[in-house]
Length: 377
Image (cartoon, one colour):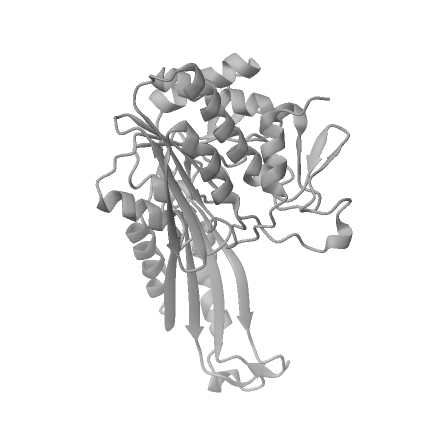
């Protein structure tokens, strides 16, 4: 069997054990491949994180491919059928950490650019690559740093494809045209500790908090919109008490999280939570952490170009979706008006024996190439 260039590059990248925030030379290899194509490659270091910004051309529109070379930890090695950093072909699948999240996408993007620039040496516009090693980690030294640098020097991004694994059951059945925001709260409700036999001398914060929590659970935060399900509020942890069965606790700590759509705002959600807590007369502290803002790309040039490429390659009418967790798209959307995520099926991401079906690898590359043709040829 003749190995395709995309498969070979995928295996090469997967063999580098780039557990977040390590890059382990992945981006240097990408720069070696992109430079002969006319890309000017720039390494942007921040803390332990390596970022790559590469651009070919100076004209608009600028189409950017974005992704990450870091992967999540492997978990117990003995549970893998083959070593996670020794890419292994088995029964039509490529196994190893990063197979679907997301070294295949990066390899496919690079080879797609090689093919596109060879076929269209005088293409219009520009092509860029924004690659980080901090997507699976805290995400404070990665894509957000590059976006801030690009904004400061006035580089305008027009379209961005993030290579996250978005397909559900088969390649091309789903793309992400937005993601929900995430905001967490750490709530401490204060009471008065005391002996459980003398409740009149104490104040049980769990009892006091319960009606407020019930109201927060029942609250409809918004109705969503064309692209988003309604905003979700969920409790993740509750801790109260000393461990003794005869002590009324002095406080209860509650962790909760919003996954919210563009139908709500950070300030609006926070105000409504405080209003409910105050309504119930609680003595409390509440600390907020905004993990990411929602972003949305309505149907437009980019989604049309990508959808057409998917249709031409697979015959599928793709679904636009905003489901799932957060991604670096939330940072890119601050400087780019159209951001779409598209990549291979996501059923094995972050799992033991992560894999991708080999039959999807070259079609993925073809879809990226055809999208470039639709936008820049």
